[in-house]
Length: 87
Image (tube, rainbow, N blue to C red; front, side, top):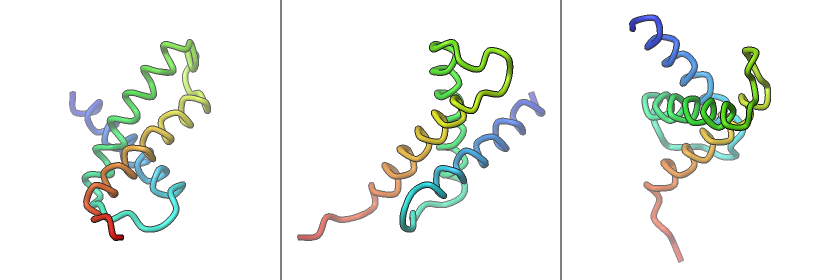
């Protein structure tokens, strides 16, 4: 369990960081939230890739793109949650 947990954290960190890089502007969330969003996006993106029969032989660039897009959506939702709407 230790190695799989550590690998999930590392993948979450990478996916979360990539998501924050593709989003414009500054996101006001912490690194722990970024990692959590990245882990969730990695798991969901892998499941979507498996459902679409993508990446069956290991690494798939398409699955990585799906994971980063999901993480970017998650980061933007969480970062936008704390903002007040000004008129």
